[in-house]
Length: 296
Length: 124
Image (tube, rainbow over the protein chains, first blue to last red):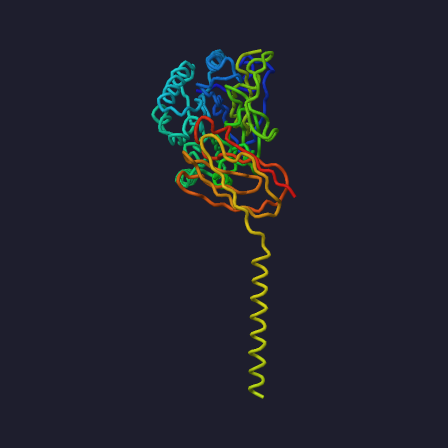
């Protein structure tokens, strides 16, 4: 039987007290009779394994430190999801597989039974997801957990940054099996909406996916790609971007071109972190907590 | 009388046709001719990387890649095109506002993809 974890307890279990940003994402209309349905998961994103450069002088140490932080949490999450860019891109297919292999080996140290993966453009756009699939399987899929329907959308295996008609048809067919008030969570890498098209922070046919999701009352999207926390609504659908775990990027549209923010020696790992999401179906919302790489 | 009416009708028709042709001629020749600009790409640069255009002046971009498939996207001017090796893609735009706008590659092309961009300055 699952243990109910109140948000306050979750923070306490995480050993972070009041540290971290908490945001509630409304799930209007979702009412459950039992607390046993509540659960929490972690979202990790943009680990960019293989990156080397001044924006992160501890490029090979950040992910191991994150894994240790997660393993020291007082409570095991139901699952962890990595929302893409597991590895940093390389033009060399052999090196790409080496990075994917190293990444897979490292995250096997996570003390969590279930880990879900999806690619980012750095993992998949140069070979249409071939190498990624060799290590992690399908790039788009669904699963259900305690009454919530999760949909993983791939908007990166096509180098044109689009989902594609075939996958959109698959999405439409899947959604037909859902009630209009079913709690639905979408995981994807790129924003489905036009956040900053000038920075390639968009999905070319993302509006088609949103259109398919719009008739459903309780849809929340968690994504990565932009290396920072960000929250946006398209109608009643909430979109939450996660921090990355290699280097932060500037605020959307804050400068002509995107480029990694410089490492701050006075505040190592600033702007990096991972996210806890507590699905509190009794209160009809998700509580989001942002965690740093290492405790302050 | 019948002949006179017919003559008048034919004359009026000829006048209308002539006027129409003149107007059509003026319309065609009054529109500014598009300026053709060739842009070539290779991983991970555009040539040229910076352009200056005139507001209201139609432009045809002739896009080509010298190595792999790439994209040319200027969201602020609502124009994009594929850059395909061995082929020229033509896209037309009439800049409708002044300013400096980024163009970038929107087809993931390799390690330097994210730094592959240029700028277009539109002046009055």
